[in-house]
Length: 154
Image (tube, rainbow, N blue to C red; front, top):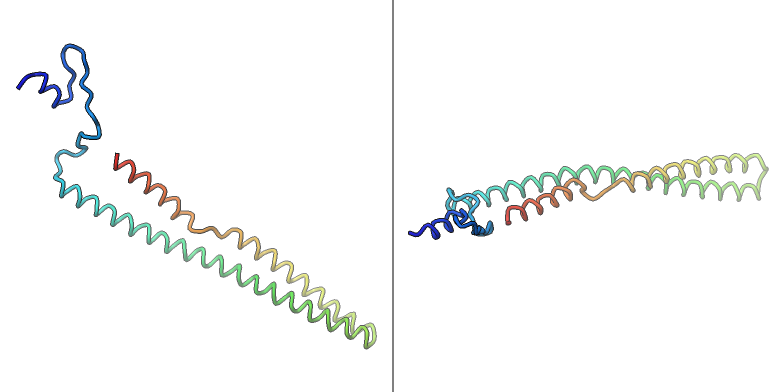
């Protein structure tokens, strides 16, 4: 075998100074492993990766559902508070027209208090609803996994 051919096979440059470029795409990264072993390792790693991603999504999903449930409960409380405010304000207005001022004024005070409760619950529910994000950690790790897979491919 000629030294020129030997140099091409080993990737060394020729003695006359002309460099024989070795294409990294055709050079095996793990020449000691068979194709079957490489394929087995890849499927094992992918299986582990998918299991971990599913577990992460479950954990994040539970946390997000808990926050969304809390916000929904506060929205319901705000709705009930608003309904009570309208109910008592209606009673107060009706009794104001029909009866003495003192009774109607009492019902109006109760209606205003329920209105204040409804506003507090509504603002708190809005803040909690805005803080709910769709699986942020899973989204981040999936992006990392895509980058890792691209790096493994090249």
